[in-house]
Length: 290
Ligand code: PMP
View 1 (cartoon, protein in one colour):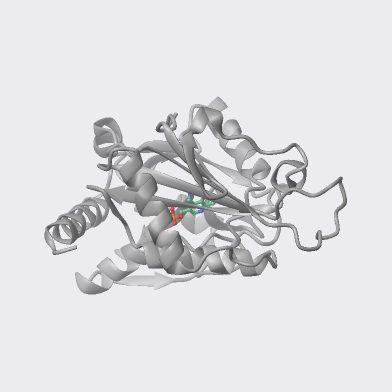
View 2 (cartoon, rainbow, N blue to C red):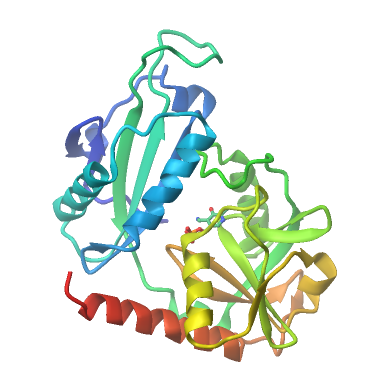
């Protein structure tokens, strides 16, 4: 588990995370009425902040909640949080809810300020064992709602799916909807089919991952063939390679799905290329002037 670093931000104040308090009448607590973002920080620098803040805006638009800050204010707040926690490699978590009401009513409250919370945790490299061996995954029916493109704090579906995977000794659940694989419970999905990288197109069935965008950009810049198209369950099971992507784990290989080996049971050659391209991309970014 990623343990929180000491300093958090709550409604205008930087404070020890253990001292942060919200009301039980906060709509985030009562209704999961809020959205969140997770932004990786490499050597003290936020990775693709504009993309993450754009997705935050689109999540806020999706739940009809006004953005409490403009991009410059968010950047200042988040950069200070990184500094307060000692810089280096972090995963920033931020959450905006529809605020604290005077009681419990589903209807939107009038003129209630949103609750803005942010914290950080240490961002670790992908463990060597996962680089070498990949992970096990299982397929599960997607029990989530119909707006998976919104990064909502209502994660009960994700929690139950992930827990089921863990209890079956798998790291991740790959989700099936209408006979198609859409994404992982906390990651986007890529397969390699006949030498071509395939990922499902953006839709309300999946979160538009920032790492997903990065991998497609890297496929273009390195001349790797890719296609955005739906992945029928049968195609998933006969894939040459399966990868998962997320901000905290970048890109890693699934080498066993539903108890059967994928490819030769080891992370595949295209995954290896993509993993190396991501590392090169990060190195180039960090050596460029801020
Ligand atoms: N899909 C889901 C359901 C997720 O929770 C996540 C992030 N944890 C992703 C995809 C990957 O998105 P990103 O690359 O922006 O972290």
